[in-house]
Image 1 (cartoon, rainbow, N blue to C red):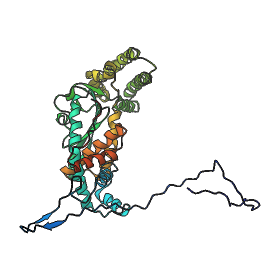
Image 2 (image 1 turned 180 degrees about the vertical axis):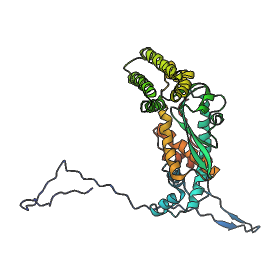
Image 3 (image 1 turned 120 degrees about the vertical axis):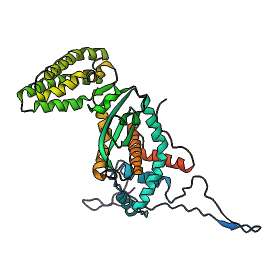
Image 4 (image 1 turned 90 degrees about the vertical axis):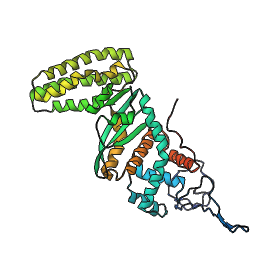
Length: 376
């Protein structure tokens, strides 16, 4: 800390000042220290037996990495690539140029594989828990693996998220991710592969955009139905926000939603029999499965939108646009596990870096990684 004390001259007449100021003006400047890597050397002595002449080399004690990378370095590099979306080459450049740690892209691949192996158990633990969740928010996005088309899926619960990369977007991917016994409610868009789950809540945020497209249509009949639907959607969200803020009770919420529900269903029926090609298919699908529009009115605690899954998937979509996907099966496993750790730690308001450090450190001692599950 630097400051001015006795010996300073008055700025006007030049007289010397004495005493101290109990409340000085504080001016703080933050700076980075010079970064020097910490290198710990372990010496393994080789000694020859005086009796039989056999040379024996000392072994590394438990917890000492067999490679050149310590736990914090492994965790940090994994975050650079899996959380901060840096390529292998960029990560190696960062480590060597800014942190003064000699590194090359091949070394980052070794670190990636090491961390991916550490994350396997906590990842599978979260994935197994999905089957017992009462509600999940789900979404998917196209990606690539070794220039082949693939799909990145996410399933988000209240305190954790699981990502998985599959070669298909088909409904067969659902049991791969959720298991065969899942009986909860899925918040999703209207993609047909989710229909296999039976208990759905279709996303009203998606539907709101579809309704806006009707409003902006050049056909007056389509526009009229869009305007009528938009009015009811606005009323629906207004009632929902009042309930979420605690202004009205669950009973009042359900009561006020009944006329909105009735009016929306009637409008969908009108569109289904309108004879208009732009309206018939959309309205028929919505009316036929109208119970999936109103699950949040029947079951307390269910959200009317799928925004939770879309927020969780957004960083992964940005990663895919920057990297064009992964180049191997091992790369896909690393990305899905790192995305899972990153989003889960965000939901739990914990440090992803600290958890990764603890997980890697545990593996160096032959122990399992700490769990990412919370609660019973």
